[in-house]
Amino acid sequence: GQNIDQPTEMTATEGAIVQINCTYQTSGFNGLFWYQQHAGEAPTFLSYNVLDGLEEKGRFSSFLSRSKGYSYLLLKELQMKDSASYLCAVLDSNYQLIWGAGTKLIIKP
Amino acid sequence: GAVVSQHPSRVICKSGTSVKIECRSLDFQATTMFWYRQFPKQSLMLMATSNEGSKATYEQGVEKDKFLINHASLTLSTLTVTSAHPEDSSFYICSARDPAGGIYEQYFGPGTRLTVT
Image 1 (cartoon, rainbow over the protein chains, first blue to last red):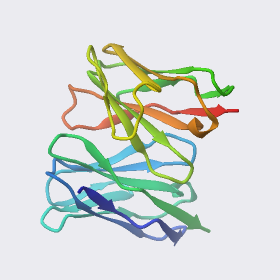
Image 2 (image 1 turned 90 degrees about the horizontal axis):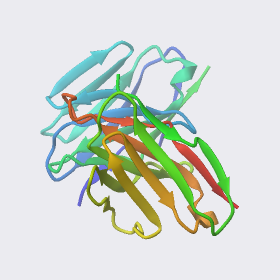
Image 3 (image 1 turned 30 degrees about the vertical axis):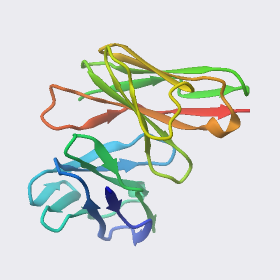
């Protein structure tokens, strides 16, 4: 079956760095997405990786290793507004998005 | 960027009534739209994939007669929750894929919070 694993919850301090991991086992792979979702709101797109390596976009970076079925989202210089759930999703061989359960990130001052 | 709207944002209805939720792609034509449901503190659950001009594809366990989906045009898909019950209370989110986009990114609407009393 298809499976995406990410931690349920993480806590970090304002100004620090946090890494949210995602491992996946899917039927085929056509890319991996990270979305941010604040409570009561719809998800917003953060990043897309289809090739191995690190993609940097401001304070957020996303890494992919296809051979390991692994990705991480790196958030630097954490701000209180970064408190949200972070969803990992993989596009499978049928171009269907398979969603992880999300990681709730709590930022403390 | 691509914008998806959803209406209404919140709706309260009585048990047994039907509720229609609209999802529109405002600046692109979406051949494929997706309907999700999200319960509190849980992740997105795909309910169905809506293709313009054809029947929707429902995920296992989703009752097609209860959740009616119509994708009559390239910019509009509707979800009708028929004979709603309190257990249907949830956050319903639609998304759309822009076929002209370089990646298979889904653009999400703002969501509709349904409360059935």
